[in-house]
Image (tube, rainbow, N blue to C red; front, side, top):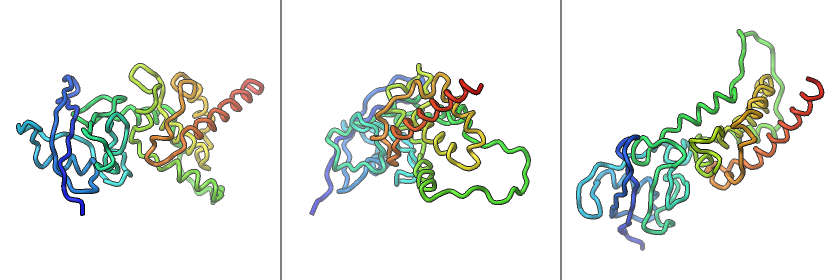
Length: 248
């Protein structure tokens, strides 16, 4: 029967957005089958460094503990992962925790993801309706359409795909891989079709599909095939551009 063991933990810490970061090491005793989030929660109860010195609790985001909210995304041994689903027993020691590099640091492992939500606004991910009236039943979606929409709607805005994308950084206009999933979903919705051309036009601007890349599907906690989604949008934008060229 497995017993508790001591884990060597190394955390990149930063007091505020304007401060420089530094490393702090810890020794935390955990039982088997613990996640990195549970490891951090144990450390929070007793914030003592590996040298035996008291320190402030490590700040990190967490909410659902089941990879449904996206809050606890961070770099674990250099790879972007969800702390709530990453088992301590599966990670090589020392376990090195860092905040996502693609977003401004708020404090320690907590980052500011506001840019992700601003990007959704820029892509017009809503349907404008002037007033309200009963227009009757809308078009029915096939089971395949329902499955596709449900899959795309699983995006939790965790930022893992942005972290894995070499095109997503402070000096790039790229809106982010997550936007592609939301655009694809809205463009397939019966009401979303109304503004489909506006979204496709937005994707043609700097920061859209021309600046996108591949390779983000592997890190998505919700298994959204972002490469496939982006390829589909590329085809839609190309077809839209050709129609617009010939028909004005």
